[in-house]
Image (tube, rainbow, N blue to C red; front, side, top):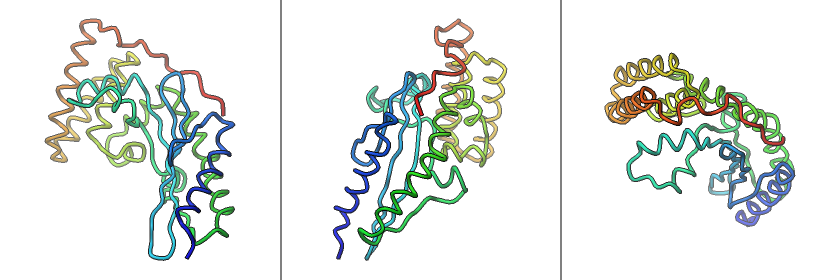
Length: 230
């Protein structure tokens, strides 16, 4: 039987070498690139099966300013933990074709093709995702999708609601902020998400008060941050 752990490590080493010139550094099964506003991440998972395993890949971004605001409403979440939370992300396959990216690995012979397929998806979908969401305005647009369409980038409705109003607050978009508060509150109520409401409503009220008082964060983030090198 093939040594699957060894095959997995070889795959990770090859992926690391391929993305390193773009500024990504490996940490276990993740490859992360720091930006001026947070980080971008490419991550690989292994799904064990009796006689082989499958490889999946996902991508994510973390926006410091959004997560800093949201972490203030997250109770005991530490600053270090908040720095590891993704703002947006999903499986590379869902982001491109609507189907999960899953590649079968039966042995060493499958390494070249699986590695090439994952890198192809990363370069065709992942890099475009990273470039687009270096813009806080585009992050806001994605987070503003209430309901099923918004789950493509962030599945949890109540978490997406908090991040959406945080992004609107940071961009100084007052009308958008109030519209999103109303839309998300109604949506969470209609779907019986009592816990989500208990987190979202006080958070939105706190930001609204901070805006009225001329809080220092409101409207201070640029619409587009400098993009990382592709």
